Length: 237
Image: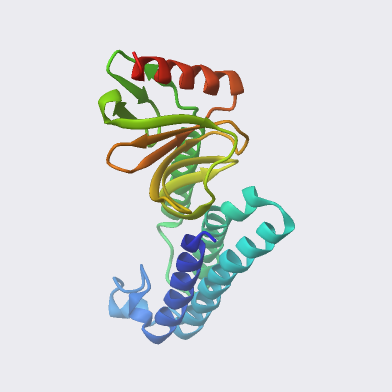
């Protein structure tokens, strides 16, 4: 199970209860002058936000398990992204109806939301850009998000495998559309680094002398095999 979905979901639910108990934590409202605060139906606003955050948190948790059970891992792993983007947009826009002050910054709200969408789209696009293997005389370097360079002197073993250890948890990484990049906990290996562009084999499993492993593959099977053969040749020269 990706515990990140559970943590984020529970965090949003907690935020929901918190803003109801302490409305002064609501962004925008907490910086208003007293005369403007009196024109905000803060009781209804805090209730609306509480319900919204709880719904977002529950949707992330339930959606993750539901789509994983239905066999749609892509949607399951995207629940945080989908729910937070859609949910925050709806909350920001709908929350305006509780404010009876004259609005001068409505355009700014939409600019901020558009910027958030562009930022998320840019991160997603960057994460989906395939890494490239750069084979050098003394090391192999993988480009792109969570790219790395490994010196051959630090490699204890490299194999080409038809399967890889199951992923237990994403610690700090990017997962979308079958792409997994970053740091993950693998069964039997603990914290490991992944640069996976597909869930299909083969997988290059590089074990460092220090004990950590890196698992790499590409969408093109031939590219994976060619990269493995190049690393193996230079490693055993």
